Image 1 (cartoon, helix red, strand yellow):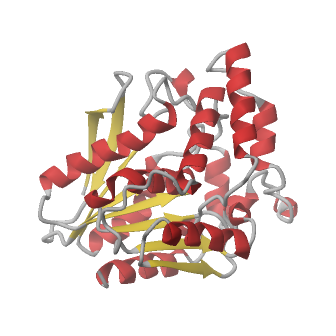
Image 2 (cartoon, rainbow, N blue to C red):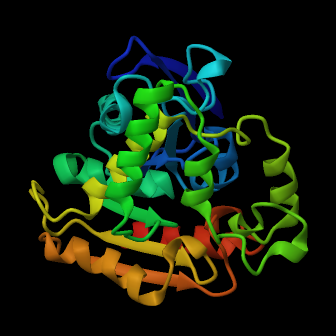
Amino acid sequence: MQYNYKIPASSDDLVLAVSVIKNDIVPTGILQMVHGMCEHKERYYRFMEYMAGQGFVCVIHDHRGHGESVKSNDDLGYMYAGGGEALVVDIRVVNEWIRSQYPDLKCVLFGHSMGSLAVRCFAKKYDSLIDALFVCGSPSHNPLTPVAKCIAKTLGLIFGDHHRSELIQKLAFMGYNKGFEDEGYSRAWVCSNHEVLEKYHHDPLCRFTFTTNSFTGLFDLMINCYSKKNWKVSNADLPIYFISGHNDPCRTSDKAFQHAVNTMRTVGYNNVKSRLFENMRHELLNEIDAESVWSFVLKKINEL
């Protein structure tokens, strides 16, 4: 059963579009999903339906500037004045909203891609609110991110927060599609499932460019989650799982992927594990053999 709601966001007088998928059976836990850049909550429904069938109350919201969490369609790709910080607090708003309805259930937080950056920023302040964390399809640390942020802020000052820069867009995704060009999709690196790619490339809620405001917010998230400063580790034994496709260009290399894992250990978490899935790309939950990823996530949650 699917239920759709509108709840106040953390700032900007914005309203967040939220979906809850659950089954008739007595719930065993909460799974809170946090989606990636330039997509929307509906793309996670298949996985959520699977987990709901296993007894989980699954909740997901459209990020500010995504899906239905906009004041107008012109704001797709615009994070509003709150930027990346408000995006993280929005996750807390949804978290507190769903946990208030199921106060006795454990809550697992799952973030994909940009969402994987956001959930680590969330854990940096609010790890006491969750019982496990999944970091999926994480973009690896890039030491040039502060430079990219400076460019985005400068272009925003010159052309305005709503300006959409093709320069930043190209810099952000340069080289990602290398090796996948023959498949005929500009973003074939996202997934090897061509049915998914076909829908993705024709989905107006996926095919938009971030504004300078949102690119600044995105770079803030990346800088913040990889910074080893200001972590409020109150749940050092929090189970944390990094999962990624072996062929995902976002992870850059085995060394860079391991750096992300080790960063969480360095800041004080004792139970950080990782898993690479062979022959899979960026969107693990949508891959050809996605069910193997789903069952892995379910297994790890059931081990809590």
